[in-house]
Amino acid sequence: SIIMASTTFKEKIYFSAVRWIFNGMPDKKIIETLESEAERLLGDVLKRRNATVIWELFDNQAQVVESNVARWHDWHPDWIASWNAKFDMEKNEEALLAYNIDPAAVYSDPNVPEEFQNYWFNKGRTHKVK
Image 1 (spheres, one colour):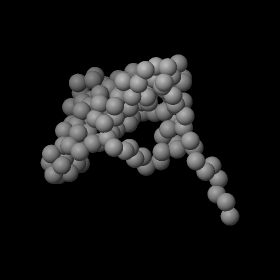
Image 2 (cartoon, helix red, strand yellow):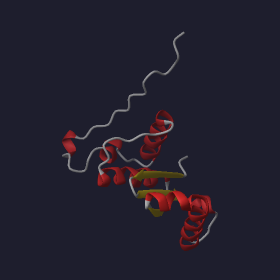
Image 3 (cartoon, one colour):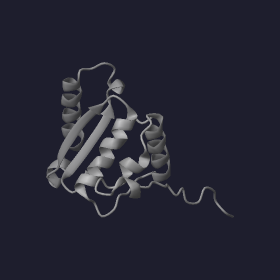
């Protein structure tokens, strides 16, 4: 299950997570802790990039996926890179479908009329050829 996701774009950083991983801690305390740890562990990098982190908490993994993809639509990056894209995209799709959310509605630009929205993930090569 997806517990968190983040997106960075120039001086903007977006971090979202499901609340349950924080074992019942109140939202305010979670955000304070995240901010404190980000400063402790990444303070120099954040200052050098003049970066601001937006923190959000959600009730389920589909909301985490939706919120991150919404940032992509808001920020309009030229491209998106992922460390382990095949795994991430499969898990994102599973999370959305588990909550009856159409991936096409999430991944398609909101300006695209619904009848033209589409989603298809090309998994690429699924095995090595010797």
